[in-house]
Length: 498
Ligand code: BES
Ligand code: MN
Ligand code: ZN
Image 1 (spheres, rainbow, N blue to C red):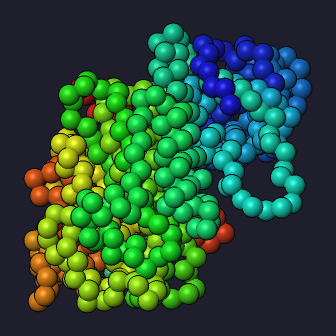
Image 2 (image 1 turned 180 degrees about the horizontal axis):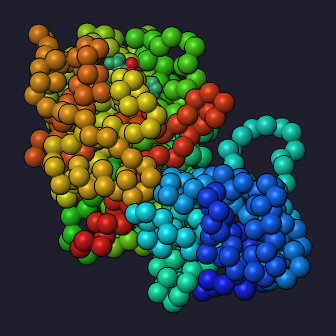
């Protein structure tokens, strides 16, 4: 899909389809007013006759309207003007994509970014167009044998803006939105693949492919012997019950000054979480193929960052393995020595994410990072606390936490701050080792994060628990690609700040 910005507040562009917004409370959007004049008041008449009420998300296609510059006009309901905000704007864009897909138009001009949206400047308005288009066009890499439906005809999309300044901002917004689309799609693809395809080895080859595609990325993939050499005792304990060999993926992106401290992203890469000897109940166990969503998200973020050529240095680390039961599997009560030297009593083998992540956090220290952010489908407790609306955000560093929360708001991929620290670490006391890997039911998302915090002392560290946000169950079952938008937005701002 090609995205471009054009200057045209008057709906004069010839295109296969012009998309204009109409408010519910009588008002026409900026471009709709022009089109209405071109069509001798047809839009007003349709409204008066009750044929188009312009409720948010309503669509009406006017084929071959005489007088219009475009071959088709697509009316999009924006709801009431007073209520029109970023959420409504996105919804209108979603309806646009859906409706355009049903037409034969191969190009379209979208005039919706001309409207004022609270808190969204023209760059963000354009960016949302590209983002929503990419997200809606996304197809799960399914293994259905029936013939695939034909791809929609649409191949080129223009976003109309008022003037040259708007055009510059919108061009940048579209570039960001398209890169986000690619990053999010990569993340979703990886997470949606079945666990017999998306193994640790497979993730390693995909990370190596990124290094082939982008000269700015260097990838190293360590195997079991490399992980042993690093003395990652906790990571090794999780993988020991599985026949699939583990991998430690390390990608270095260099876009900033040579000596600038990198930001380190760590993603949980459990390609299947059976729970191990502390085996999960069968009903929803299949969903644990999504347990590498954090790893998928940091690789997707890396892809977007490389695509955007951001002027930052970034290190992406994905410890990846399966969590399986077997005669050789780690047992409840086993004690392991982590890479940091701290010992851990594994009371529950299903609390495996923190075990692979704690060693990855220790490993990240060798890059002398400016900040370390780990992303993980870490706890069911986080879903209980926040549902699938907000990711959990924990941190030991206020500015980092604030920056991540702000990025989530800007990117419509929000995270909600939750506490970590001493009180929760107290729940992790063990009589036999430095720390236990579980701390009871109460505050489960916070005890898990506080466990990680023990390994992040003196680092600027944040943790995103995306158990509720990275994928959806039910009829919409599949990966959402979250929190790629939050992370990319955060990194864009880091690049601007340096
Ligand atoms: N991967 C799960 C967390 C999870 C659960 C993600 C449901 C998405 C949906 C994690 O490894 C896990 O099993 N956590 C346990 C921790 C418990 C044993 C302390 C959990 O949340 O039940
Ligand atoms: Mn688990
Ligand atoms: Zn897990």
